[in-house]
Structure formats: C-alpha cells, structure tokens
Image (cartoon, rainbow, N blue to C red; front, side, top):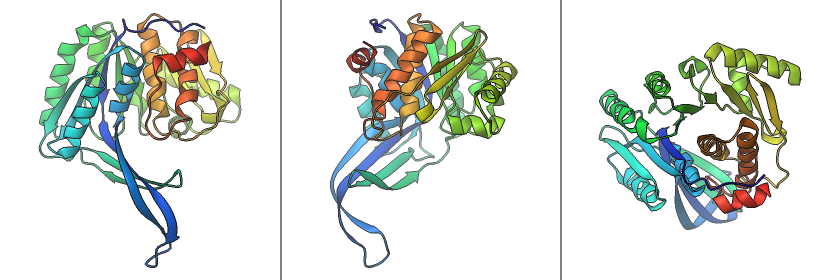
Length: 310
C-alpha cells in the first residue's frame, strides 16, 4: 500500500488537552525514608497530551488541523499553547481562570516510569458553552471531526457536537472514556480499546462472541463503525459490511501511552482523504506499531508511516 499525500485533509479536534511532563534521572539508591528509589533528575521534557497529542499526530502526517479545548490561566496552559503553535496547529484554547490546566508528571528512571502525578480540575459551564459556539462556526472548514474524550469534563456537550457535525455532513470519530457510550450515539466511528469495550459490553469468550457484542453495540449507538484496538491482538473494525481484522505489527513495545491518539488521528486523516475502511484501518494499525516503539506521548511522521506501508 502506497501512502498518498495527506495535506488536503482538514481535521477539527475537540477534547481534553493536557501537558505531559517528563522528569528523567538516574536511580542509584533506595531512600532511607521509605522503600522507594531516589531519582536524581537530569533533564525535563514537556509534550502535548490528550487531544493535543491527537492534533500533533494529525499535523505530523501532513494534514491541516485545528484544535479546540480549554486550559487554565496558568504556566502549563501557556506551555501547551506554545508547543502546539510550534507544531503548526491552528489552536484555540479557551482560558478558564477557575481551573488548572491538566498536567501529568511522569518520573522516569532507568528507562522505566517510576511514578505519575496528575493535576486536574473540570472546566466551568460558561467556558464550555463558548467552546460549543466556536465549534459550530469551525465545522464548515473541516472534512472530519475527532472528539477526544479523556474524562476531564471538556466534552460536556458532546451529544450536541455530534448532532451539529452530522447536520453539516462531517464524519465524527470518537475516542471514548467511561462505561456509558450512549453519549456517543450517532458518531461515525468510536474507537475503544479492549478494556474500554469490556467495561461497556462485558467479557467475551472467543472471536464470535466479540463480533456479536461489538455489532450489537454498533447498531445500538447508530455508528457506521466500531474500531476496537486490542493491544498484542491488533485491531478489529466492525461495520455493516462485516469485520476487518489487522494483526499487531511485530515490534518491541517500549511505551503504549498515547497509542490510541495515533490510531484515531491516522484513521481520521485517511478517511478524510477518501481512503476505504481496509486502507484506513491498515494505516492506523501500522502507525500504532511505530508509535509504541517510542517513549511517552509521541507522533508518527508521514515518512515513517510511508516506509512502514511499503
């Protein structure tokens, strides 16, 4: 499969953004205060996370992307703004002075994550209404919409967003969270991972039962397709014409964080460029195979994906 030029695709991404901070250091001893390692921090990195990482993945593939979200009036929000602009993203971060920007701080020692500390608060209703109004004005400018739900409160009006996108004739892809998928009804595609799907439909024993449960959920929600990412089992797409299965790409897995962002970004860009379901799923699976070989929230560039698909 040859990867085409993807620069014509225009994506609008809405969802929960966060700043991923990494503290890298050496571990040479155990603390005398508690049985925990002492990390001598040598360097720090900051990367866009959540919906911001989805946007960065879209931009890395060469497509045009606009990102709509909410941050606090703080240093972390300013850092996110700066990082996203430098990645060529048309970013609109509504500032809510009543909240703190979501930050995930990871401490890394000996190439392993030792600790993660989260800072987060939910945005206010007034800011969310303003964001919804901007969403409606930006819809005509895009080919497809990604709604990236990390459960941080930024998609309180997701049902209305799906309705508006459908009226405008736009494809809507949702990265879900939680045990209630009814709020995603009417979307084009929902992309749960294996654990997320299990939370909603219960356990399954074998491929036949998985297909039955996935198809029942797809019909119940009125989706065009349901894409289940299955870690070492690859991914499976269920739609009206049947199922498409992609085996996991055989690579050394370094870090799975952010892999779902890469999958939905690649799938959306491919569909926005007119790719078929098999082509889009194949590309998304290949991109996932590349990104899990990288540390932390990372992206897959167009050239990297093109080389994998040859």
